[in-house]
Amino acid sequence: MTDNTKRLDHVVLWVRDPVAAAGFYEKYLGLEPLRVTEYAAGTVSFPSVRLNDETILDLAPRAMADRMRMVPGADASAGHPVNHICVSLSPHDFDDLRTRLEERSVPVSDLSHDSYGARGMARRSFYFADPDGNVIEARHYQ
Image 1 (spheres, rainbow, N blue to C red):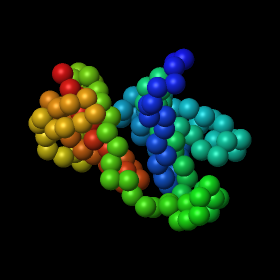
Image 2: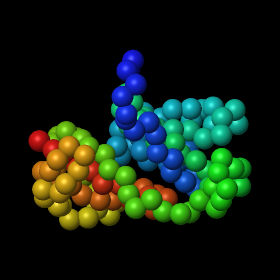
Image 3: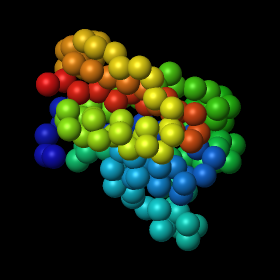
């Protein structure tokens, strides 16, 4: 990535156990865990998972909230919900994800059809929650 066009860089999710959260995102969504070993060793503040070449999800421990001082009131943000994040997958990966979640008794919503998103109308989508209650929408466009 060499240009400076606008794009999503990262989303920070508050989690109880960053190592367990990284495992969830790796196991169910196939996301690459980053800095988990370093987090466990205490050399970095939080691990992440890679969504794609350009975007990561940071898995911030809720205990870190009192150190959030980038703007007034930021330390009170732990536990304040983001409505949901959405990941776009291929139709095959979409079906595989839903199957993995259902096989492991992770509750999923009914399928939605033709919902609007960043790339137009998605053919199918559904929602599920990670172990910390963060809601994730999975969708595919083609």
